[in-house]
Length: 313
Image (cartoon, rainbow, N blue to C red; front, side, top):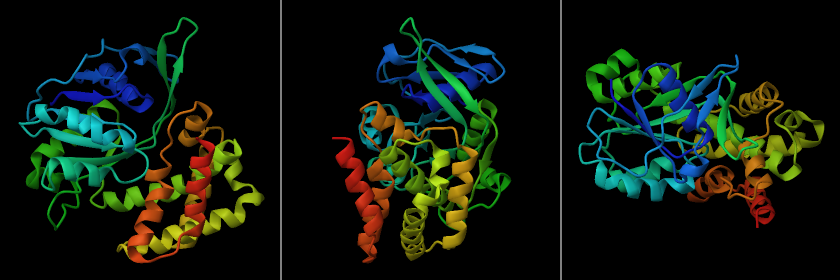
């Protein structure tokens, strides 16, 4: 089993670390700011998991190691450049972020044939500060992680057992992640899964941020026209790139996720609330950018990008 090296001190990365600790998987954490790195994680049943002391900086990785980057897309370039000198053995790199654009960043820096995995997770985690000034992470919702290998040449292995024959390093990395924070599900069509998540984020994130609301209010009647317009533009753009999304199904899925996560506040809502940079460029901005390349109008997504950026100034 390889060792996990988790970059950043955010909620999901800290949850992965805590679950790895709980399940006996070797790991280290590399936060940008050690002071804000969670010292422990609290499970839904009240169980508390203490985390290892964080590392001060990158270390040389072995081929069997796994470098996980659960970061914002806009943080990826700097993080990968920092780690590049330590990746001579070509350990597996896992990108795990909201929105899109990370694959392009990684390919530019690592090359199109690097052993790379893309992942998206529905596990819920919340990073909180305590009265004493320490930080902890709370496991707020059991989910699953979907993962795939975008750099493999076609035909893409359809099952994990097939991937083990073609790319054992990647299959073993997936197994290590599954041992850390299960379940981890291999997806041969990971890009389809990521575009599907993009459609959800494109509706929920900007609207909750702009209107200061919980996810459940996305289903309110006042947002019906906006929801439909966002999903319409998304479907046109995604299908122009070879996907096969149905607009009504996209909208149905958005509403389903909004209701299932109803009491939550989206990550973009929280970024605005705490004065942080948002991921609007990697979500609605990505749809706009890809639309331009195909000559497709995307006025609703363009407006959302402008409004969120105005709000975050």
